Image (cartoon, rainbow, N blue to C red; front, top):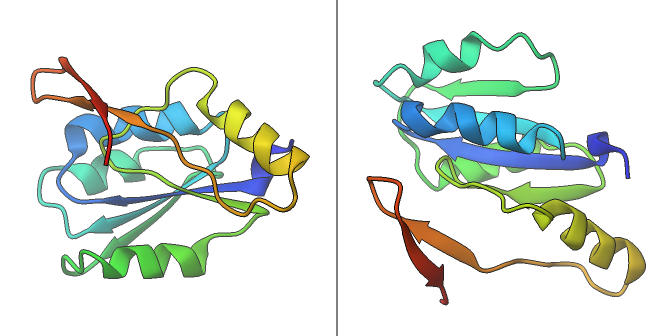
Length: 130
């Protein structure tokens, strides 16, 4: 699997403290595409500091919330699309397991995984099941 086949779309709003870790965490598995919903916390400066040409960054003049996903869908290229939060972290093996399922089972169009909720202090609050 070539990582250029996976577009990882990440809407962001005022998550300067986490977005860098998210982008560098998904970069080995796909092409990060970030749309910034008019953040005021330094997210724009951080994102513009990246020199990796594979990282794509777009800034909205206002916070359009749900509209960011639509914008990102239009910008996504590749065989697969992964939606990722601006404060999410992938557990080891997450991408590999999902891609293996999709490649081995062409009749499956969508995979997802459970996730852990982390509080503001970085403590794991357990698996989310909704």
